[in-house]
Image (cartoon, rainbow, N blue to C red; front, side, top):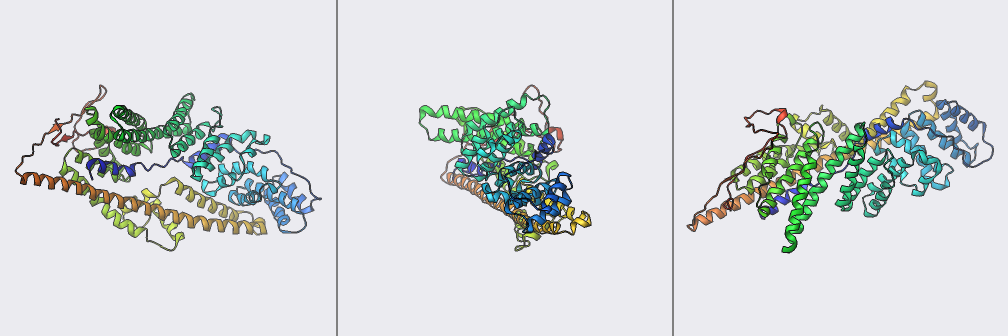
Length: 576
């Protein structure tokens, strides 16, 4: 394995990027913008005369006495007094009543039965409006997008949906995006592109359009979508938290797209003929510089800042490791990458973990023939993470056959109240802050809230058949949701374990490369040859707005992100 292959091998972890939007934040924003949805009464079809029970139920609903109405609606659904058409109406009104009572998960159960029946149900089309409202109220783990996905796109063109059409188009696009296949992604792109710039869902849809293009392997189209977000958001004078969040995500996504494009151009240059080679190398250089540009636009106050520093380090690395010899130019990539790594491992961020940063630092030293420093960096990684690796193996075996108990254990890890050692507890927690997992936890909390709401309701309602039915339904949903949350938590920790195992293998590969160099050096000496080591010091470059201030072992917050390392190249070809 050559040094170049060794460096690229380390990129595999750096390129595993998940594009997601903070769901809870997005839901909160939607509620603030639109508030409660207001729906016109929907009457569908005719049936034989309704029973007195049904009439009383509708009267209670009209008077907004939803608790009383739900009692009589349940009687209609469980008795044989009314025909199927009336029962379908009762089912629809039960879903609406429970929604108004804030039993959102229980409400979804009734609307789900309508969706499952499809067009054959009289209230199938009318239910779509309520699904949109529930999507605002419930975490994505409730599975509402899957139910919206059962509607054809043509259903969204109904006149009564005009006020929420863009929202439904966005949700349907999200459904197809989540399917994970090329055909579905193409459908998602078409839907996202339907939303006009004047819509409040435009920026959100444009972000997912860009992410979908990334999945499809079209970086140019992806970058256009992300840039359009920045252009349209720039026109908004008063930018709320939601707009700022998507602007930042667009910049981070652009940085990742340009980094990947740089890799593609670099790979193509290495395989191309001489007449195209320099043009492709030039494109790679431009792409890596653009990646750095957008990474540096992520502000220090952002929760994405440390991640952007780490990813930016790879762009700096590629500039010096692969393009310096081509353009005979020092891009100061090594010194900036090492400076970023110094920031990532500052004591201010002891709850954050960037294990691969140690290996990137080792590869940079290896590239500069600093074998002792490279070995020290690898050993530092092994000393710290071998212990964590062994401890994590024990953690994932906890409650091996009981996901419900593992869910409770995971909750304690997140709260910092588990029985784990402080450092392993923080390390395990770092794997449990995944947004998809958080949505599953949120869903469990929502189901628990609704169960407590039943318990705190008036006695004359909570002792009725409908209350008992709701408790049974919510209890079953909660049991399934808790088991899934426990399973997902264990899988996240197993994934972390697998990643560290992979890095330990790469650490051994670096040590192997170092030993190979040493063996070759000894072999040369044994043949009586003299090794001439040329030493070249890369000077730290600063612009007119900054000054050099030596690091004396003490970290200062205002210096974070600005560290630079002087790298002394000891390779024999350094001066050539």
